[in-house]
Image (cartoon, rainbow, N blue to C red; front, side, top):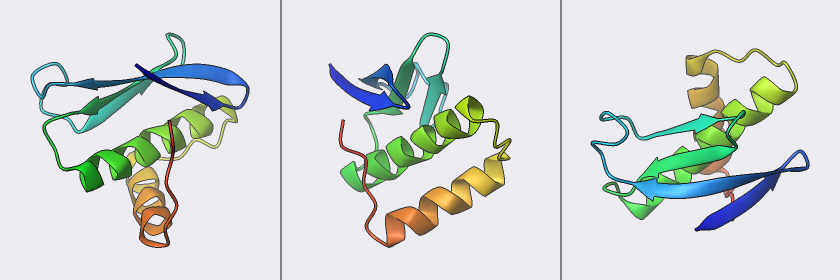
Length: 87
């Protein structure tokens, strides 16, 4: 299992099946410190989803209050310029 440090807190990165995520690409939980990524998508989509979930965590932890559309756009722009999360 991969792990990543975000703002001094360790998060587990789990790659799970589509059914576990209810058809979503990914999800995260700051209280339980995990990120789950749909393993049934392409590697590129998994990387983009991981970045998206990290942005959700940062937004929650530092009270940015980003909406889902804002998070999606920010992840897309950052991914397009080469930003990757390595867990």
